[in-house]
Image: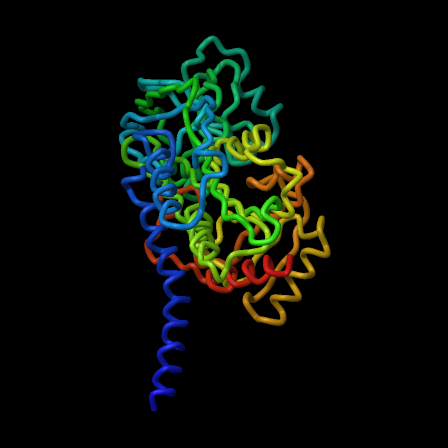
Length: 416
């Protein structure tokens, strides 16, 4: 009986340990995606609060700073909208983040402006230029169909601003916020303008930050046999922040999910029984949403020789997984990909491991361009579709394949 109870206790302990990993990730995600972190962006100190929280977690583990300090400081310009945003289509107030977004390249604008509608059938720049003409009255906003999305955020001649119509809740991004343009741009949900109002009321105030101060975070767990060779796990912890005073872009999946898994991997490798032969570095990047700023800065100012990297595994948007995962650069490194695929087929960690070619769509890219073997993993599934909208939060967050992906990563690193 004692032997049976001991076995049962060990079994329960093992299950609890596995469950605690996911529980820890959820706890971290809840903090990262909270209102208090303000979307981990550019207003109300949200980015720095998130960074301090991550370092606090790292200090609880066996991880040490890579270069004397967990932080690697850098800066870049960014346009922000910290004040209350007011947009009315005719007499109807529009809700920031739900009915409209403001291009991050937009200047301050205040007043009532006529709206000029370009027909939905207009699909060419030639049609647009004909519609604009060289009219002396430039104090209006041009309403454009979705087909003109490639012009969004750019300067247009002879108009005060432009509205790009969208069929659904508009996505926001900050990757064009390095420069303030002359033309004001908004994305507005088509249904919000279905009555075709003749004017729009705007009260939008920008605040341009020439040098937004931020930081990457770099931690290390030294290997037992080859400490000078590195396996790197990376994820970006920043998100879009806030647009105005009410629209918080929480960024749970993008990329609170990857950051949470990274911190969980730190905890795993901190345990003496899990210490790998190679050293493992953990890089938490800022500025990804602004255009891979943090990872680019790191590759230009590396804290360790890039030649020492055996492999970089970047995690970005890993909150789903009902349909498996995609490995970006899997087609570039077929041997690596087939090893992951074979391991998954043997252990049944995930529904599918899918291969993809090159794509400069996350923080693996600057390393790949420097010749470092780099892959980017994201999960597949329709259970959490929210992306670059305030509703990408941690309420009912799935983490569908969290355990399977975690086990696959750990198992694969053991083979290196």
